[in-house]
Image (cartoon, rainbow, N blue to C red; front, top):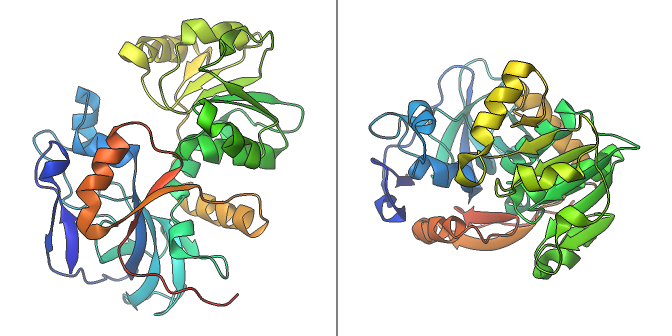
Length: 329
């Protein structure tokens, strides 16, 4: 099979598309023919880890896995012994395991009990590779029980996590204020944001409002500027260590004092499968949709890495591994 192989850390130039053996599903596993996947911030961070903690997770000297890619959508090609939930030909979507080879290939094996589910009827494969960003966005909604009556600000609401957070917060019944650049104002409004602020035109930290939760969906906001936006005891949630790594000591101090003032909400262990089923429900209800920025074929995946590395992507960047054939609803 063809796959994007990474044997060392480095720039997108180290990502090489080549022929490798097709995996064989073990007992309890499903072999997927990958139709679509994504390149996202997680993949870029795995390619070029920026901090020692990341190296400990991904591998000290070289990546532990040779094929990246978390989001996946495709068809079941074969099943291993004992598999009863899926059969060849089923259209599924979900996430690959972080420490095993991923979806940047024509085939990938995933556990039957892992985070995969049947795709909503009539959906294209490229519209279903949305789990990774939504998974992390939903961690904030769950950790702080976002719901009716809550006001949440989402800074950087145009990326994969941000666009997912806007939709999931609205599905929870919260009042959403999205902070984006000028060109993304219409986008976040179309996703359901109640208020959209152009951070290039005004200081969003001085709008005179306070929020129950502030989510920095891109890891670029300054907590010390943003704290005036928080209600007493309200959390500042970030998806990264922040500019100049300033969030790291704040996160540690918040953990020591148990204040939950500055946190990086992480999904609960073992919640992956339930989340994919949950997201499928939101899609079928019309409460969640993909926002696709660019599409690349597998052979051009290095270009996708370069683009995502600019930090300018909107929503998701799709890798179309196998040509998609629409099916009737």
